Length: 319
Image (cartoon, helix red, strand yellow):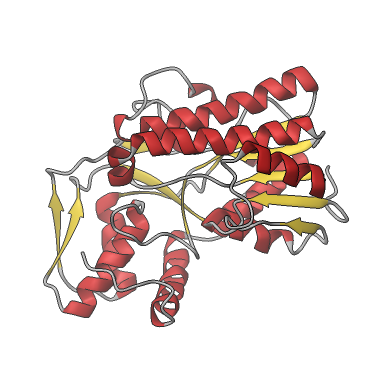
């Protein structure tokens, strides 16, 4: 087991939803947490990242930084998604390798798997079939990050591991309807519909795709757990096992928000992958389990959303 107490741990991407959750989780480990805002350090700049690592000398790196977005953003800006994510991964992983960081955990995404992978998706499904077209550029960049870590572990013997989280939600999420994922988008749209007295809530797609959702604080706990206890070339799935259809999710969000309206599905919009649930046998076999049920997590997140909206951190959102 890797003891984090007294270590310097760099959370790359600490201002993001996952990165900030990792910082919260690491505060229990009595380690020195290294962070840098984008204004202080552009993770796409390999030279700047190299200088940062050389100066701060982290013992552990948690690579949570990424350019992320929902179906619309991935479809509209494919070049941005593949180029920026490759730049971030290459800069951080190469600098960590160059300066002798022994432990690095790279956060990938469940979208790395084939569109029609057998369910639940096992780690071995990677590269066994075509990707989901609506986010293949992001997925390819994440696959490259996984392979970088595997190659460095094989050639250098460093503990550069990869974790594949499922769909995440939680404090610090992105509620911009042009770039957000499905769950924060539903919260934002349901809240706006309630505020405006709307009689209908329109949701993209048919409502039939099945998705797994995990609270980001559960994810952060799993990442720290793996960083301390796992060493292997095979990436590890991180999921909750809480699977719902988009229609069920929309109704649950409406219940939490307190919206009474007709739920309407716009089938002219893409559904994305039909089903995506991760097989978490490996993580469970190591001894980790999630602790935050979906409804409880949604209720907590909506209260955070209301607070951030009232304070001006989240601007008024219109569906």
